[in-house]
Length: 405
Image (cartoon, rainbow, N blue to C red):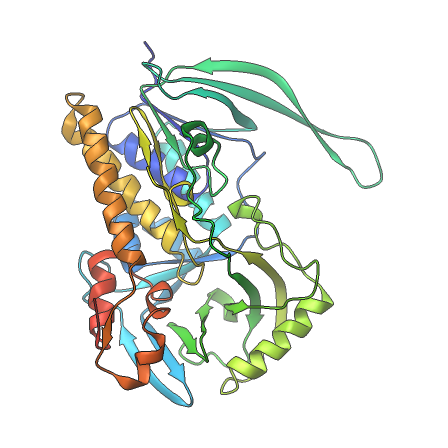
């Protein structure tokens, strides 16, 4: 037996949200992550109005607001024509969303965890996991990090020691290359070609519609411009044919977008002139990057006492951060299911939670079938992945522009 109720593997936003929700449900939680620390400067994420409401309920929204840009509406633009969608009045949602650097989001969540008595064990890597054990047995490498003393300060990582945990439950929130998923013998990626997205952080000379997420509808593409604080914006374009060597492997969510080169700045200038001709050229381009994002849904989200959350279970386009936002609500629903079971019928509650969450993801991934507005008919398949909502809120937002299941 163990005093530990839940081991969360992975301290990205979804892992931290899971730990916070589970701790608020009265469970003893430990979080491990092989990284040495949380993210610093990082790719900005869009938080849907429903996620904002969840953060408010958990008592962390006020701490996040100084770093975040409020998003009131979505502006759809194509061929000089536009539509504006308010985010007010969506089901079970706040009246606005947020755009925030992922590093700031993690900073706020980690502080909330510390206040609940949960400290993240950085530099700790899951080595082995007996997924069918009662309880599961997790062997953890405690890593030591040092530099080689070279001119480039090359980091050397070695196992300083190992420890064994036997938690009642293991949650894998360790990203799209999840170690927990591999130990379960499952994977989220469906093997289909992974589209590439180029991301740019830019300063626009005029703050037009500073609280609007702008979606640029092109010939077969939907691109997103999320306003950030202090005059900056995050632009994300789906692209093909990038110069050799500029696409980053997604080794970890928090290090996805670290590329900056003259080649990518040339790519940005071309994309902006082609896809945002109605907007003034940015006065400054900050960091830039490109990465491939697989699409997929794991055939199973776990079994027994080992389960998956977020990118470990499903993968999607980065335009509206759907995988992260759905992961937040899956974590909250998991905590609610465990609280309601109160230890009795816990495994059945977990199975029911996973089936319900997976069905919702399947509904999210299913393309709408009809559109009342001929202007939007060409974008029916791609638009849902770019709107800042999931579940009933997404269905309501689509209905407002005449798009139906």
